[in-house]
Length: 378
Image (cartoon, rainbow, N blue to C red; front, side, top):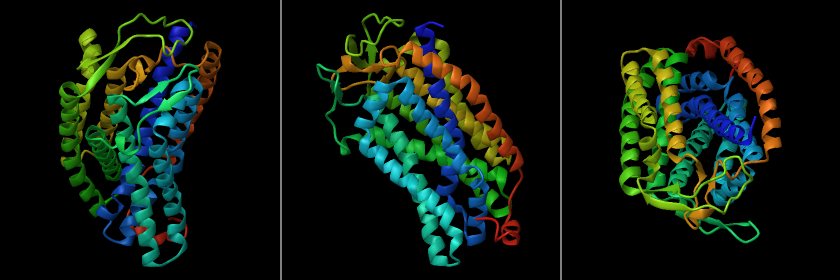
């Protein structure tokens, strides 16, 4: 397999890992955010927590795997991303620390004040990453202020508050609402009575809102955000020449791929339609269709970002020629080949045990069930 094909395969694989993380961990983040809003008493909140308890830590394996794959396949991107988004990533990490504390310690002390604090730990620990993931994508679409010096040391010229610009916060809000909606569709599948009814109403509202925000994000990107395009010839089979290309910043450049291959426009269109199907399904109590359409919408949103930026992975606003693309920021051909073989063996294994765990833990939960099993459940 030649270097060009391997590079493209790993671009696809990392995209698949990100989609897998957002679909699986997205619903447990969403459920935890909704804990105080939908759960009106301790039994209802316990139902919500136990609906995600068997899966939440396994779901985060997707994030760990995606970061590991990023480090191995795109080491330069890994270094640039962690240098540029250092404070955002540390804030995300500390927020994620709150989740296991909330899950594991909530049931250890039978005290309302203690459980209330643990509920807030779960909610905050889930809401902050949901927003910051979107903030990071919003900044990638605008370009990140970094450059390489003569010996290819990376220098980041921005600050933490520069990351919190209007467009990035808008994408952060969109990301937050998408994941909360995904959690609401999951609760429709796993709960009964009042929790299910409130989840249907919230999902109907959030799905319609996400469809509108997705369209607005596209319009803002077209009219208000300059995109990047490579104007020099890149040797897609050659060695990495990270700083030896010509990149031009121009209006609506992130839409060049849609002009070149019009069929790609189906991806964002499917994203909007999926949000609308999700809203309609939640309103008409078609719970499985609501969850599946939410998952498709998340997939289309990430695919839209990837296709719009292709071949860029991390554009540089300080020195556009130093932008990182999938053709000049990869590991060696040998490394990509070894990783590809490992992925072919272990990814099916991971998918199999994940599917098995969801099959074993199928079925709905209710308040009577958590009361009858108060010593074995969270």
